[in-house]
Image (tube, rainbow, N blue to C red; front, side, top):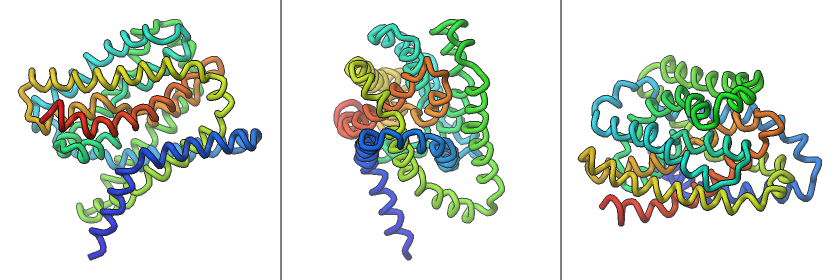
Amino acid sequence: MNQEPLQLTREVMEEYQVFVYLMAVCLGLLAGVLAPDLGGHLEPVVWPLLGVLLYATFTQVPLVRLGDAFATPRYLLAAVVGNFIILPFIVWGLMALGPDIPAVQLGLLLVLLVPCTDWFITFTHLGGGDTRHAIAFTPISLLLQLLLLPFYVWLFLGTEITASVVQRELVMAFAVLIVAPLIAAFLTETWVGRKAGRQRVTDALGWLPVPLLALVVFLIAAAQVNLVLGSVGLLPWLFVIFTAFLLIAGLLSVIVARVARLRAEQGRVLAFSFGSRNSFVVLPLALSLPAAYELAVVVVVFQSLVELLGMAFFLWWIPKKLHR
């Protein structure tokens, strides 16, 4: 009886998550400026919070229903080709618009090569897309991006820079903060029990990503405030790149949807999939990079903010203009 109001509250929270994250960033930067020593105390807390955040996020990806994605092969092929073949080369082209700084280029690749697997479903729902197709594609998307990200970093940046950043810390971050939560999420989905029980658990965990992500953003902003303030001149370049990426992604979804002969609802899923990126899945990787690559953190965090504003624009642009 109380389930509907609770679900409505969660949907409202997810709908207005853009403002929650922006407020968290502003408060974090303010806290970092007012208490400069605060960052050193807060940074160690980020890692366990990221682990819990990614675990809760991964439980919302139907890993046990991997086979469902193959029920609509035309949509699946369109989503895979667009996200993992066409967009990587568009990202490579967009890198030319930014400064020739290895840390910035690596950050661009980390954040723009990986399609979103969490809030993209929420925005697909709000934008009138076929949410079932979004849910079906997410496990395939997650597995492919984990496999292909190292290959594209090597392809676009070369063996020297790839070897220099793939150190023990990066491998440990990947294992502890991505692989471990992924396995834990799969075990949760597998072992919880009956379908009704599993649904209750995943619904309960579904409340966590927005407040946890807001807390993580606050902590990172407070800890990295000096780095952010020191790279203000970089932000206009990044804004142009990320805005161009969003516009290209939306237009690309129209072309791919027409070639694949997809319905408007499926085309909307493509648009939100192409436009949204998995910034907070790759954030632990950026945080674990050597000190020479610390600007990659600024790139990843700033992309998520531009993307959130872009998704608000997508909610009007996609269903009203591109996929009617």
